[in-house]
Amino acid sequence: MLTTENTVKWLILFAGKVNEQKVYLSELDSAIGDGDHGTNMARGTKDMEEKLKEEEYATVQDVFKKASMSLLSKIGGASGPLYGSALMAMAKQAGKDEKDIAAILKAGLEGIQKRGKAVPGEKTMVDVWVPVIEALECGNLTKETIQEAVNQTKDMKATKGRASYLGERSIGHLDPGAVSSGYFFEAMLERGILND
Amino acid sequence: MTKKEYGIVIVSHIEELAEGVVRLLKEAARDVSITCAGGTDEGEVGTSFEKISSAISENSADKLLAFYDLGSAKMNLEMAMEITEKQVHLMDTALVESAYTAAALIQADAPFEEIIDQLKPLKIK
Image (cartoon, rainbow over all chains, first blue to last red; front, side, top):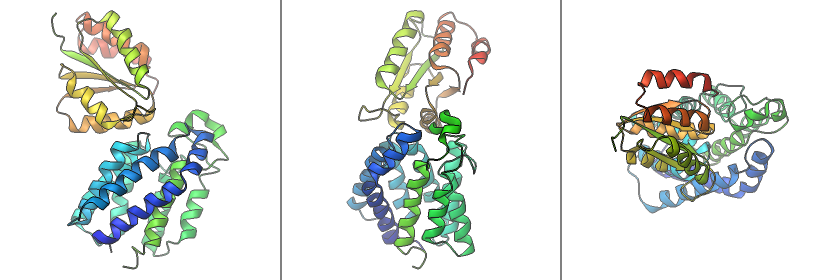
């Protein structure tokens, strides 16, 4: 179950992971995109971390909303509107029911798809969100499930996003957005959100 | 100067690119309100939801045609469109050529339908 405390901790851990791996994320993006995913995500999540630490929150909805605005305005790349839309939709759903984490993540996925129009199999972050939510609903979400979901983007051909300009040449590389989404869910597991 | 009913918004990942397109359009459209949003808030490569929102609100027209370069600019544009009261038409057309065409036609008082018609073959996204 989500509380304001564990949600803030989850998002701050996500920011930490992104900042630790920012060079790696940009390297992945250099191969099939414009090479700025790490820097962009680091800038956005750092701002999010600072904002989250600034004040106390009354509801989980407020936490997600605050985080959403940071990511939307500070990331700069395509991931800004995508993560921004995800967290905005999660905020909305958390306002209805803070307990149902699967429903909250589902709303986040819908937010991403509404914004980016991607469906599974197009080598995007959607390819991580979909299997993670499925596993969560079946009660068997583990770090391995997340890793597997991230790794399967390697063999996909990009048909959405910047990598789609490369067509066949995008095959053989991990999708950077899938990798950063992987950190998002790993942080959620590590913060014990599902056990609280 | 007679104010035209339609204005133009240019969104690019690069500040100079956005400004350059505006400069080019002004050649053909002196009386059309043209605003732009290029780069991130930090002036880096990317697009900014806030800059785009300002370009929309600062444009003196209430009906706008918005042109962009790459996909992520479109997503930020769509978010900005959701919060504005203005009527914004998002154009999935070749940025330079179609924005120039639209600017020239607005300047010449062409009706909206005719502008849209002329832009159709330039749809590439």
